[in-house]
Image 1 (spheres, rainbow, N blue to C red):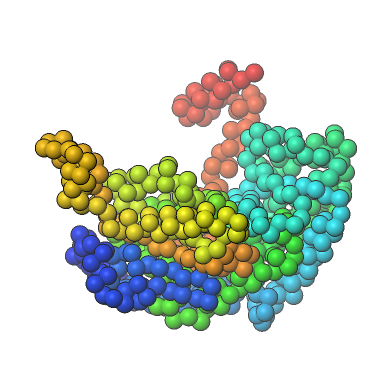
Image 2: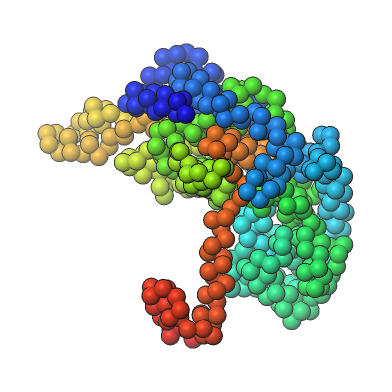
Length: 529
């Protein structure tokens, strides 16, 4: 497509232009920002100018983003490789109309499941349960674990714990301090066959039976496999299913979010859904230039596919969002980590970036050195709230906000050799030593970032943030021409792990594998207790 070449030419022409120079335009700070009623996304600290932005918007238009967005919300089978609709948005369609899949309105079923979840959550919260253990993996773990941690100030129900790793240490450490008589175990697996989840579930069931609990009453399942949950011994009224048009990494809005609903209550969970619903509505009606998911996606395309920046760092200045980078890592890398276009041909552009990060200010003392002075440019995505939840510690939050804004400014502004040399002269250094020390204190600057600011991290706002990133993934996927909603890359390792288990257990000859794998298996077998 010719527009890709135009964008690449624009980048080549402005690659060395200081971002700071763009602020000679007094209106840039407001023009290169998108604001809704509750949040503001600033992308002014990027090397995107108006001409580049116009080309990026044209790129989105040429990819039919608006039409494909409407098709998604309407229940079309946009997941073409699996022949499925993509309707996680229906799970938070509390005030919307019918949503049709194959001519059938799915909303009565969605609302009925939500009502059942509310009743169950109220019963658990009013009963003797003190702890909830959610057993899942991937989207069945990362979403609720992240959301429960993020909304800790709103917890007024049982304590929630999350087990995902098949490493026995994870479930052993989690169960060790719990009372089997007052613990509810939620097994989250759509098919009820996920090997890590079911291994942990059987261990938890044995633990409960050995310590005086009653699995028949104290287990719930988030699954569509009624026969398998019944065979496991879970009563049908404690099984909550969801359809195949909800992908795992997009599933926190429905039954997978049951642990969150138990922690913060049905009213809090409804506020979480309404925040996402508000972002859905914004995404559907806002013009592209004033559309937060669209502009966040275009910044991502500019940085990754055009500028060639292979990673991006997600940096929430909120300790309770410390799991958000991992959640977004799965959301983005599992969705857009593809090499084949929707039609089966090789992608013409690189696919999604490596997503990583950590909560500020901890990250400042871990990896910001590389971001500021390393040889590779890493676009950063900062987040910070105007208000914390601890008014008695307001000075902490003021320092937090100052650090967040300072980091994005430092990345853009940098420090010149002349400035560094002057600093060393002020310290009394002279000659060659002054020059040597100065060079170590140079920051090239001109490193791009976005900043998302919001009023307070409450359930409504968290819903907005997650939905913002979901739609950002969608827009980037459409522009790249790939399917963001399958994940075949997850399958091969699972298949090989299943076939390797008999080898590790000594029931099959390791020599049936490749020489490297066989040698490693023999070492493990020889050295295990």
